[in-house]
Figure (spheres, helix red, strand yellow):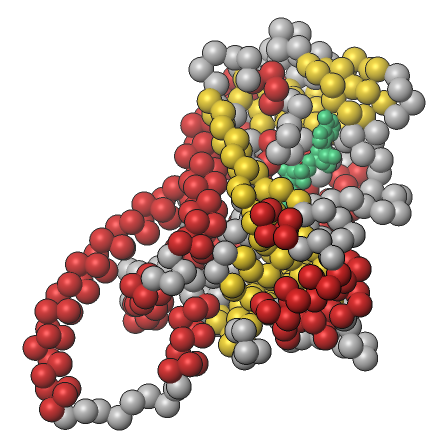
Length: 469
Ligand code: FAD
């Protein structure tokens, strides 16, 4: 193809490597613009496969992801198959459940099935006449000089393919990214956290959800925790996050029972005592990695998006949402710069790197926070104050979680604003503290009626605020 005029640029070939969540969505974006799109996915077509090996079974979809789906007309289809989660439901050790809303009334996140989401996006992609899906095509290598990609097909044959633009959406262990590592001034870091995760299924009871469905259930237990998200078939998928060291200590069915009796007793009858013993060992605990790099592009030939550019630990529920927003941001820049790849790619890096790095840091921060600050009374108190201030000054103080989950405020700006709010609130509290010293004399002298809430209830609620989900 040639690139001498804008009209011929419409016929350029875009190769999307990876047909996962971000690749399938991205393919729709490029096809919608009229490009000739070829998607190469190493797996077989998951719409035909019986067993889909994936990462998590379900995911939380929030505002950024929805906005990205909307742009290609997919929001309603996906949302109609999602289950709204308006609140977290905190399970304390004694079985008490306390709901903590995610935001204001009407703000919720959605539990969506990963496999179904991927299938829907692939089917949507296939409706474009200029788009072709190539399954069982595993990228082995590509040349930065010629742009030629080498694929291994299911029949063992190798295939060479050329494209005008290569879009690397091949996940956290991206094969496309390997060539970036050989470039001068390419920054890269990869960090495994000491925690692993394991998934368990909680079946329906008498054809109904075993727990309240419109919640993201959380069992926070300091160094480890369990969460559960609802599925359309009325099951819940429970995910246990725990240091690998601890996983290694639980090796027999009896030890599983003992462990759950100690930390998650209310979940045993719901998962089923026998199923628990069996399913716990079905798969080994999975690792979690955080990957950061920059730039995201290589000349005007190649660009990375989704986990290939930024794998984040799952403690903010933003990995896929950020990847979907990548597609949306790229699309916005394509509009601004008339689809001129030599201008669009560097601009995409310039705009997107600070935001994706910010969400990677936030996710990691939450992972650390959950363990180290969990018992800090000051930390819990501050969370409470922030939420309270948001209620009385909704435009001035916006909790970080709200900015990240329910707005498209750029991630790095959300972080900046959060630091600013932090400073202001801390200074405000200092003033308040000064007056409290004076006021406390009066309080002791004339005690008011206490609110109708037990100390225990108050504690569970405070406990819940440390949870990022
Ligand atoms: P992937 O989903 O990894 O897809 C990559 C695709 O590329 C795959 O289909 C793969 O087969 C293919 N591929 C790989 N190598 C090659 C190759 N060499 N040639 C051709 N094809 C190749 N995010 C959220 O937003 N909300 C959540 O609640 C959430 N929960 C999570 C929970 C857990 C436990 C984990 C681990 C992650 C979670 N995430 C969540 C993050 C989310 O899963 C990822 O961000 C998302 O899957 C990224 O999509 P992707 O398409 O970039 O990568």
